[in-house]
Image (cartoon, rainbow, N blue to C red; front, side):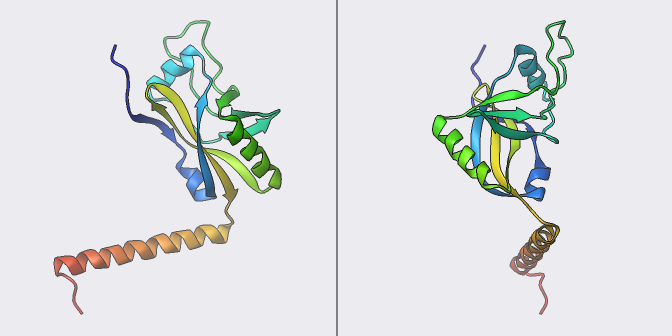
Length: 160
């Protein structure tokens, strides 16, 4: 069997970028059992309610839903079990310091295969207020309108 290369996204948490302002991102490995990997290879996972915590010097991913493997037997996994994340000691120490400050969460942004191994992109994020979200939407709309106008001007369809 040929070795996998590259990055194949399994699931992404688009809602996280809307609800949080991203301060920093980390790539972490995930400790999984066999049927979880097989289920992920089928492209099934949900990061909707997932979050990460730092407990006793280790980082854990909670709320990640990986459905049971369809062709699994009694060895199948539980869909929402707590999974350990693999990070370097220095990264964990940094995360401990930042999360102790308060108002900061660890949110998974995406789950993907990288060179055949399952990785999660973890973000150090601060929650947005409602007015922050409105400002972000207004800024995005303004940028889109400017891009449209520039496109029309380049095509010669813009009238003064």
